[in-house]
Amino acid sequence: MGPLHGVKIVEFAGIGPGPYGCMMLADMGAEILRIDREPTGASDIEGIDEQWKNSVARGRKSITLDLKDPAAVETALKLIEKADAVVEGFRPGVMERLGLGPDVCLGRNPALVYARMTGWGQTGPLAHAAGHDMNYISLSGALWSFGEDGRDPVPPLNLLGDYGGGGMFLAFGIVCALMRALNTGEGDVIDAAISDGTAALMAPVYMWLANNRWQNQRASNRLDGTAPYYGVYKCSDGKWVSIAPIEEKFWQLFLHLLKLDEADIGDRHDTRQWPDIRRWFESIIGAHPRDHWCQLFEGTDICFAPILDLEEAPAHAHNAARETFVERDGIVQPAPAPRFQNAKATLPSRPPLIGEHNESVLQDWGVTGEDAPVLRNSSAI
Image (cartoon, rainbow, N blue to C red; front, side, top):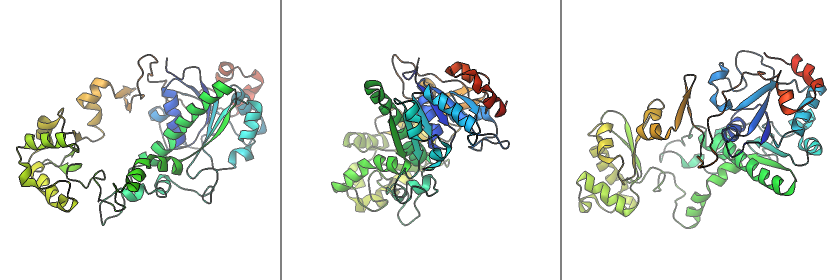
């Protein structure tokens, strides 16, 4: 059983960080009931046409409720009474207008953890403004820091904001609040903002900046891909490798394997020499295919890895040995992480169809049968 076995969570369907945070909790064994909106077409709220392929929704049960109906709101509140936590990702004020705000819910369940996931947070000048990952990571200095000098910043997909600064901080906050509720019997309201979480992820960079170890200039620092000993290099077959021998002993091994004399290269700590050193390595690494460098470097202490595409990654020997990726019903997906020696976190149940559990969830959650007509009227089965 996963470490969160026995924890019950009501999730109001949303997009991006909320579902991802709930996937993390479901992966750890939490029982999650997702309240979905009535389907209006082929796609769900995330734009997924085939629900069984929505691996981020794994580990849930799904019911549909029309939250504009007071009876449906009452049914939701009865379910919340049985829950340890609630997750919602609407703009500030929406849940209050529905009659499902934190004051109402904690009034029914004082030990409840009420988690709110937004981009800008519940307060502040931008709290009610629309936005997406790219916007939220812009205010922390994070987006500005990605990219080459003299060129536009490069968005790091939506990994940094939605999922790192958003979903992961949401899940972390819920677990922290659950621990407090367990010890005190008192619930809490979590204001999880992507903009806040992204800023928190930038803490080491701001630490280096304060200690004059980081330049407020893109492509001028050893960890932003500019240093010749911490970067990406293209091979003769058009594929890439990542090389990061930062520490001196790793650097010396790197040079040894390349049969290079350090005296010929120059001072790698002199940033003025970085462009020349990088061009030298580009010519060396660019003379051979990626497999050549894998055979020479992989598994050594020079800090090396091939840069794999999305189809190559699951098949890599290390990922295969650790079962980092798993396959279910023909869908390849990342396995639950992290791992535990005693509390086994295994792949939870498949993604539910919208409204799949309308007929069973009331009994499962110990809610009275008088609510069944509400679900039946919302049925998407």
